[in-house]
Image (tube, rainbow, N blue to C red; front, side, top):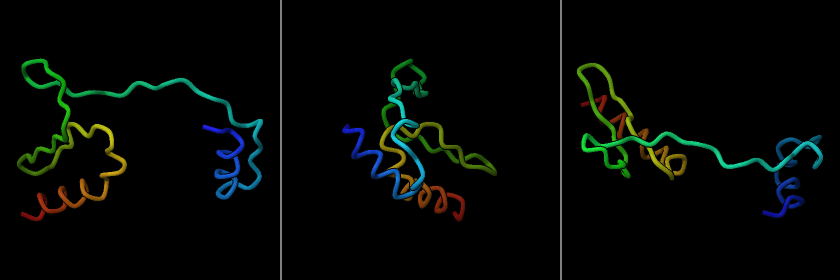
Amino acid sequence: LHKAAFVRSVQRLVPELGDDQLVRGGAGVRAQALAPDGALLDDFAIVRGERMVHVLNAPSPAATASIAIGRTIARMVSE
């Protein structure tokens, strides 16, 4: 990622932001759900309880899929 291009993009939202205020960060850690057998759960896991809906796993690209996830939850709640 080219820092100058990134700064220009961010400055459309925060014009006063300077390039000296942005520093490269390391990789983060994300939670990963496991199946009962210990295998990684690689898909979305949305479970309906008696009076609630739980999103147990929302792996990448969860942000991209957030509208669809919301629709799924809304449909489950309305049933």
